[in-house]
Image (cartoon, rainbow over all chains, first blue to last red):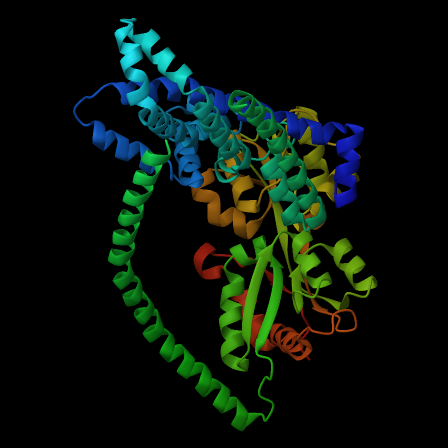
Length: 227
Length: 310
């Protein structure tokens, strides 16, 4: 994979190297987005429906974390997992879990904030109905999330996009190791450094194609609802 | 949704304006500060240029020289020193672009650089043969070293040269970090594997695809062996805790060359500027600076001068 044409040839012929990179990219993106949604949806729903002291401050802190620079998140996880770091004994540095942890730090705040605004924007309309049902609290949350499902799909896509396009943190804690932690973005960076600009562009296009597929599926569901 | 979005947008727009207003004066201060600090430099270059016009009537018409080099050369700290001396003695303005060797040479092919300073003999010769470069001028060398954890579990220290050391590492299946980025260091490493008759693969061979410094950090974390240039090794030694397992051996010689980009292929390049840089690098002044570099800090020279000033 050194030229524009060879990347596409590899893409069509199902070349092992390219598909290993694609597979790792998809795996990482699904895991880091998945964990962020699992934790972020309930956290957003909780913050939307409860009031507690320090809520405003917490909200500001979380929304500030939306602009957390990936390299800072990467550096933090690196120091945490480094051999001399507090979690060094786990030997997680330069592995897929390390990349997922770093990306979680980047995506979780985005999911919480966007979920919170999505629910708040529809709260007046839905809360009266939901609360009069007298359901247990967790069911109330689930129902609230369900009512906002099409907004939450956009939240999911935003998290997915962040994960797929991110390079600073995964480079730092993943290490761009061939066959182990090399994903599309770090492969693009590597080819650029090698001077294989055509291959880098081709890999970028393949990455965009992947993003397009996911967005097309999600948009299909959203549109089905509006029709 | 729309309403609240609009509300939030307005609120955050107001916040942004406030933020910008509070930051602007600081920026202005900073820019005036940098402007005032820039004035003396401008004056000194002007005087340098003026001195030169009186000494030699040929004042550089095109003062920008674009030097494409590899990260390891730039990171060693030698190049910035040479740059300063070159600029003050000739009035040229050297712009250093540091990339991997592959990209560094590509910039010469596309005419985005006037002169190259690289260390990958085969690629350099191909570059000149294809007509992109005028001539390959080897002017200094140093040695790669094999660094690793102080325990040295593959017993590399007992080897006499890099080929036997690589064989020992492969036999022990000891972790080895490769640059894997087509850089000059990576090419030298692959050449040693080839001489050893080994195609490295398996879990122990880690192809990282990163720069020298990052790979040393990774080798430190993984307690792995690594082929590195000595300058970068020494500058990261304190953080990585790696030791030199095998020092200078003839099969780890690393030669640096200068190549002016051929104006026949890329008419826009600064031929005179490139020649001025090459002349400077072959001068006695540059010889002294290169030969002394590193002695003060590390107690030994990092580069050995080969250029032959007439």
